[in-house]
Amino acid sequence: MSHNETTLHYPIVGDAALEPPSEWERLRRGCPIAEVRLPSGDAASLLTRHADVKQVLSDPRFSRPTHNPDAARITANESGGVFNSEMAASIPNGGPEHQRWRRAIGKWFTAKRMAALRPGIEDMAERLIDEMVADGQPADLKARLGFPLPVWVICELLGVPDADRDSFSGWSDAMLSLDRFTPRQVAEAQAAFIAYLKSHVDAKRAAPRDDLLSTLIADADYPMSDAELIATGQGLLIAGHETTANMIGKMVAMLLSPRERWERLVADRSLVRTAVEEALRFDANAGFGMPRFIPDDAEIAGATVAGGSTVVCSMAAANRDESAFDNAADMDLGRSPNPHLAFGAGAHSCLGQALARTELQAVLEVLLRRMPGLELAVPVERLRRVEGLVVGGLREVPVRW
Image (cartoon, rainbow, N blue to C red; front, top):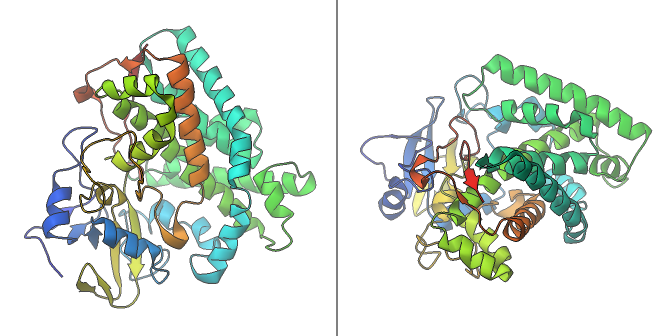
């Protein structure tokens, strides 16, 4: 196993908000398995090449580090944060049980259902843009559009009433923290959220509607316990809110810097679908990546990784791998094919990817139609990253139109 002279601290932070850290290329070329120190102080191995990340994420023997005493902890004050909560443990972590759980959820996330959701998502985006325009420019696109839209969508899926949606955003933010909130604040948010979902599940059992939880409750093939239903609701919020909220902001910032990208899309809206895929690939701030526990010795990147190790798969670094993408350092809005790993790979790839794509495409369509003159309201150098969340993003995306 190749080691670099000094152990890197992970996550690695790049110099500029939208640029990848220079270390990625160095590691991909010379140190495909790099020893890193996590925020907890524990050691792990970092994978940065497309082939290696895809191999590990696709291998059913490697699972999330949940509750394994040998696994590296992500942060010091816990057993792994959202990756390792009690709730995460009530969803089967691997093997046939996990696949059954995924199939039960996957019945809901069909392309047909996503297409049916799209007009509602576009209407919601229109409403949020109307409010933003009414309040005048400049505005923070992330706060005004990126953040509220995915909460609305997840609440729509779970059948959560409008009045409760603000609480949802707050809980989501606290539960995804690496170091922005105290352990006590995170625990309180988690407890409040679980209590809310428990009463919500009870209400759905009593009076089912056309939403995901009601569908799961009625699924005779895979009857879920309350704990599983609550964990599923929490998983969808955590996986689907902050990631998409941040991605909307990052996507627009990338397309506005340089602005020729935006102009190209305004001129040719047929590029929306491939532009969304390329924004997902090109995202240098994807967040922590995927930790995987290696139970037995395994061959990765031409070396033997010892059983009992934890590896971190950096999908964002893999997505810039020159051996997998021509001109990987360029954002090509028409790139096709685009085998990026933004949603992971294999049995644990992102369940909600059809939903995320639908949201990102819908938001981009509406913005191009409503705001062809959109531009960043600050120089790109002034964009600031979110620090201390599991998922990466920009603190704000100031725009004018």
